[in-house]
Every structure is written in C-alpha cells, then in structure tokens.
Image (cartoon, rainbow, N blue to C red; front, side):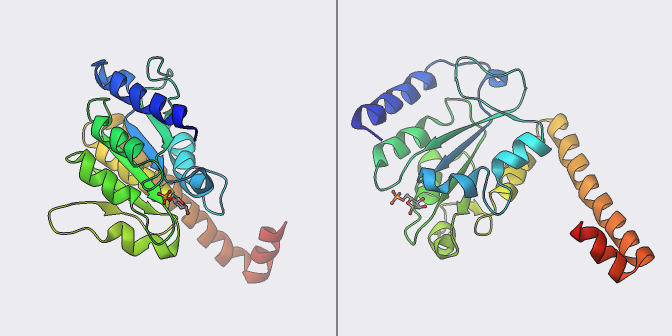
Length: 214
Ligand code: RP5
C-alpha cells in the first residue's frame, strides 16, 4: 500500500466517524485482515467457504464498498486490509473509529506466528466485540492469548465462515430478521444430514458412493 493510500484511508475513516449516519446505512460488520494474502481464507475462494460466502450466500448480507452509498440490502459488511506491523496507524484508525462509524462487530484475521491484528484491534475497539480468525494453525496462540480483562472471541484456524455466523448471532439479538436467517441456515444443514442419512441407508454403501462420484 502506498504511503498516500495509507494516509488517505486514515483520513477517510476519521471523516466517516464524524458523519453520524443512520444505523441502517452503515456497515454492520467490519472485516479486516493483515494482508490480501489472507483473502481466500477470510472471504472466499479458499479450500473452505469463508465469511463472504456465509454473509452473502447464506445470510443475505451485501458488501458495502462506499460508506456514503449503502447497497439496497439492510445488512452489510465492509472489508479492509489493516496490517498490524506494516500499517499500525491504519489498524489503530480503523479500530478507534469503528464504533462511531456504526459498526456493531468486527471480524479480524491474521496469519503467521505474530498474528497481532485481531488482539490489537480488540483492545483499541473495546467495547465493540471482535471475533478473531487465526489464518493459519500457527496463528492460534497469538490470536486467542489475550490477558484477563482484554476480551476477544475467536474461531478455529481458517474458519472465517464461523466468524460470520458468530457476528450474525450478535446482531440477531437486535434484529429478528437475522435470527430468522440463522435458523433457516441451520434448518438447511439439518435437512441435508437427514437426506444423506436416508439415502445412505436406503440405497446402500455402494450405490450411495457411486452417486456421489457422479
Ligand atoms: C501474513 O502477513 C499473514 O497472513 C498476516 O495476516 C500478514 C500481516 O502481517 P503483519 O503485516 O501484520 O506483520 O503473513
């Protein structure tokens, strides 16, 4: 990221924090990651489905790319790269303006052994809840290892999909519409297991396995 881009983003965040926009028009969830190399794990395109897949495909959220021009969907998320070590000033600006910009919850993911973005974002954005995503197995300890009095909830390594569901659970306490979407998503999972179980039993192992390979 060029120096001018960093400064421009910091100024933008502070400006947006002064706008006092209606809650329905601001992003509900902020997703930040330490590098664009985290994109596939954090959002979409990796070996597992990510937060983008959960929000857009399962829960009916939309990505908000312009703070002043929200999409038609009521519930939205935004995405930024805010490296803890390479752009600590941007990470700080994002976390300290989050509440005033209207965010309700942040999902923060980072990889490597010093995955400090989730825990530093949580400390600065407090009392806004932050859900940490260790992008790699080796990042788990540095994401979840917060001292007493400095809260952060976290999901398992790479499971940004679950982070999105957890963020939606927080929002669902105030929004029945999100609660209904979460319940519908779970019902679909349940129904899928039922169908598979019945087909496996009734068709037998060989036929069931052959069907799956088609
Ligand atoms: C990558 O560098 C990791 O995936 C991490 O999220 C990213 C950012 O690390 P810092 O720039 O904060 O050190 O290895």
